Length: 216
Image (spheres, rainbow, N blue to C red):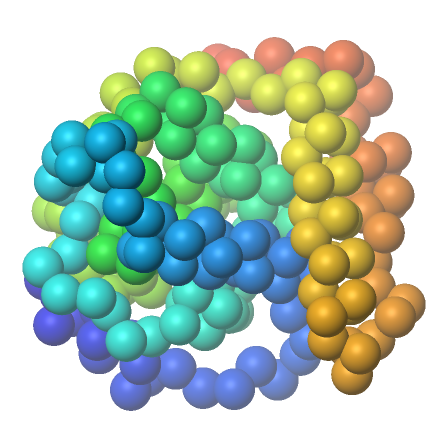
């Protein structure tokens, strides 16, 4: 299974279009968190448990390149990535003994995007297609989806205030990137449009009746 993720590297091509800054910020943040946890040495780390998201070896494809591939082929809405970020944070909070690191971050990303797309977007690809994007088998994709849903306690609703909070978090990440990378464009996306144009109500409860299944 880990070999299949490595095949993604060979298939990956440079993006023909600029990747949205919301995804750039998310990949930057996850890169920093995973590297921090890789080097972590604490009582919590000693009790880390191996999960279904953990690879046997560290995938050599970067988080940014992996997210570029997802962006290129999954055709998700930008809001889908914001909600995937919310789900990832919920998973981390509810599963403290499964810290995000270089061994599990790729599987956590593809799974969170899959779950978010099913919940957020009117149309999305099936598990077999997402498995191909992520470089894993369909069977593993199905298993990871279920494990992720149980991991977040099936808490899929995201209020508008929560959504805007995570938009602001990613915006701050872009500020940090701009400060430490002067060559980056200073006119980065402020996420204002994402915050104001997506939802008329204070919650996303209108999506709660969508069925999340592992059907292929």
